[in-house]
Amino acid sequence: MIYKALNYLKKQSTGFLFILGTILWTIFIYLVGGEWLYFIPLLVGDILFWKTIPWHFWKKKKEKKEKRKKSEFRTWIDAIGFAVIAATILRTFLIEAYTIPTSSMEKSMLVGDFLFVSKLSYGPRVPMTPLAFPLVHHTMPLTGGKSYSEKIKIPFHRMKGLNKIERNDCVVFNWPAENKGRPIDKKDNYVKRCVGLPGDIIEIKDGDLFVNKLPHNEPKGMKKQAKYTLKSKTRLNEQLLYEKYDINTNYNIDINASNQNSDFQIKRIENNIIEYNFNTTSNAILDLKTQPYLSEITKQTNGSGFEMFSNNWQFSNPNKFLYNNPYNWNEDNYGPITVPKKGVTINLTTENLPLYKDIIKRYENNSLKIINNIIYINNKVATKYKFKMNYYWMMGDNRHNSADSRVWGFVPEDHIVGKALFIWMSWDKRAKGFKKIRWNRLFKSVK
Image (cartoon, rainbow, N blue to C red; front, top):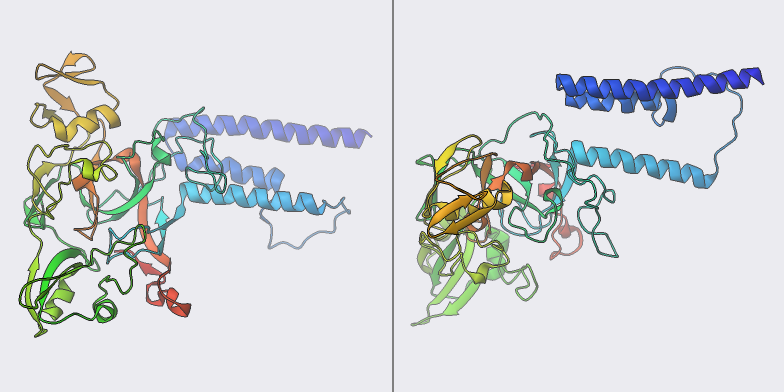
């Protein structure tokens, strides 16, 4: 009886000391700034109490007195609980899976590519809405509805990462233009290529991107697409275009299905000449130029003719960035525009306000009014503005089929999720049998 009592007190004191040590450790780490060391108490707790991981696997097991076996139900609950906790920690702080839903990054990334996204690369973001159903983004499976609660909110904080965002990185981020009332970390995920860093000057001239007044240095492995118009003396074989040149045509895309628009258009013009419009790479065009049946090939260099800053683009630009096109820009002729950098102060005028309105009001939480052409920020006259965060300029590699920063503006640093690492699976749902898996893309790094 006395032995049991002493053993009980020993366990209680161990638990008390563990809790006290965790509190003191947390305070110490907060003061010295070694935030990754916050996880140490989890390991110590597992060694002392939970024993989910066999830490002494190299030692011979001593014979122990038989303990009462756990029930089958309890064993399953423990296993599922540990798996959910481990997967949540992994998904939040280390690496997460992501799927490519649209063609905005073709041909660098394809619809149906499954990626692993590194949270470590830029540093994991501490969850802003920690009360959430595990392993779900923003909507509950099956039942629908919110998968999170906003009763507890944590201000933005990014832990130290391995690197900073570099130009040409393929970055996953929360779509900043979303206006469905979700918190930042529960907005839809997008993936684009970062072509503009804080302080960079971005300009597009005749469809060509310039960064800091120099032509954009495209990384090896990048497969950029643009829209071309081809005139042919005969009808083109759409199956051949798809299989030889990897051009999305009506052969491999159901143009009547949602999110399956291939931008492949055909119209017959005079003298039996057929005109084709589609997106493809410059390498494919070089080969097509050698074909005798093609009489003319031209690249789109002055916009598509659709007004990208109007109500026609309300789903891609719900917050009306540059609404009514005050600068007369289009997707091929744009800027120059300077990407905002933390700590930099700009002169603020009614002429440049459309560029920075979302930053001032939505991302940096200031009140903004214009009365008699005078700008008021937080009810004070403002002629200058100092940026509180860094921002980035993101573009899709499929230049003429991508709603990106040209349409909805800058990406704030608190919306960055991580860096796309590699493709672990690629699934072509339009193919049949074993061809559904794009075997040549498995475990291919993202460039």
